Image (cartoon, rainbow, N blue to C red; front, side):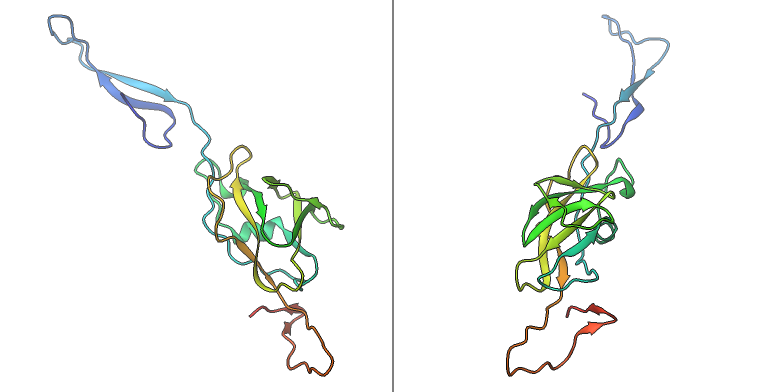
Length: 188
């Protein structure tokens, strides 16, 4: 049995064959090369890391808009069949708050994300964290998606979104410092 190398496809010079008759006499013409045509199969893409996403207007208790480009730059998706630029994502599960999807560069809440919904450059996500949650918050899990296959494993450590706290004022308390830098909260 002949087995091609992993991910090999196309016309491959596989092995040589000699003809032998019943008297064990070998062909006088010598060995003949055998070429095997191996049809390419789609390999599932991979995703092994997503760095924490820090986005503008990321105050707690408010909608946070996440662009496709921001997620693309934070993730390390890969596919032996495609360049990384051609790989999209699927939203596997929402782990905190609510997550909607809408057409990119539009307004409004969008529609609720469903399990394994594709996230492409034509869309953007609107995430609303649970009440009073801040810091590096696991928001949802994703897989790399090549249009036909999703990666085999869902990210266990989840990409997080940096959510900055609002100042919750109560009577008799004093604000010590404002953590806002250049109009954007800086998570510490």
